[in-house]
Image 1 (tube, rainbow, N blue to C red):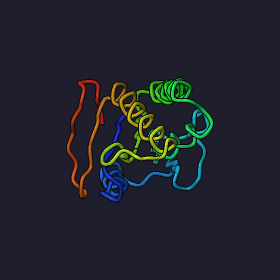
Image 2 (spheres, rainbow, N blue to C red; image 1 turned 60 degrees about the vertical axis):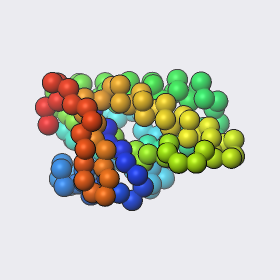
Image 3 (cartoon, one colour; image 1 turned 90 degrees about the vertical axis):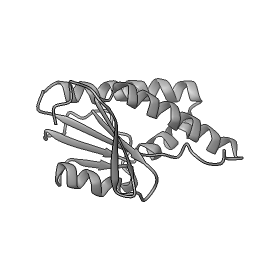
Image 4 (spheres, rainbow, N blue to C red; image 1 turned 30 degrees about the horizontal axis):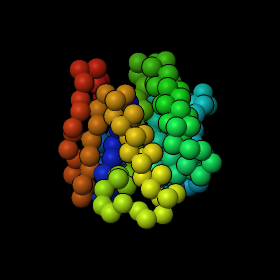
Length: 149
C-alpha cells in the first residue's frame, strides 16, 4: 500500500496521476462515494482511494473514537487483503492532512481531527511506502524493501 498525504490543494491527485498514470479504478470520497470496504468488484491491478479524511469524518458522526478506530482498522485489513491477493496489485490511498494548525473549538471537529490523526498512523504503520506532497513535490518518508512499484 502506498499512502499519500499533504495539505489541501497541494497537488496530491496530480502527483498520483503523473506517477501512476490515469486509472479507471479511482474511488473518491469527494464524489460522495461511501467508505469502500469490499473491493471484490475492482477489476484492476491499481486502485486509488482518495479523500480518506471525509470517510473518517462520516465515521465520527455516528461513532465514538474507539469504535471509529475499530471500523478503520478493519477497513484497512480489507484493503490490504485485496492488494495481497495478487502480487501485481497496488493500492494507493490519498488523505489530506487536517491535523496541523489550530485545534478546533467544536467537539465534533476535534474528534474528526483526532480520529484522522490516529487513522493516518494506522495507514502509515501498514503502508509499504509513504509520500508527503507539498506544492506538487513529493518527499518519501517511508519505503520498505517490499515496495515493488
